[in-house]
Image 1 (cartoon, rainbow, N blue to C red):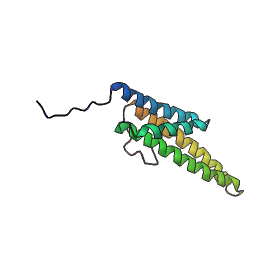
Image 2: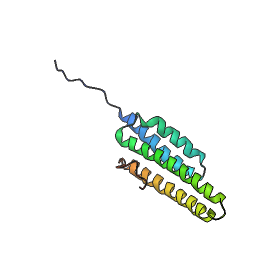
Image 3: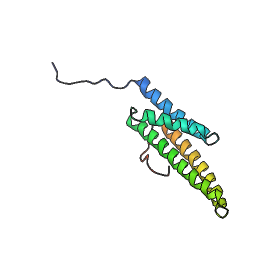
Image 4: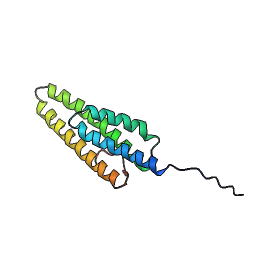
Length: 127
């Protein structure tokens, strides 16, 4: 008798479900550029699915969470800038740049996910 212990791995269906949830999150972030509430739903899904996901998908969830919180911080800062008279043009430009930044990160993340690749550095600010 062999002393080898074989642990059952995750099934192909479970990996497909994890990939589907990560893709759904990217779509929710793209919709979130227009309707912000969907981004909140996406980050809740990312937090709930990250621990059980395979490593390459965990990098996508970390990337999504980092994108969300960075955008929230930027929106808060730009909103305070808009409230001032002198800095309001910079705040408006900042909001436009945050919108573009989230759009690019969501599209690039979705393309990487569909290619079956994870993020090399999910904590990076750029793509």
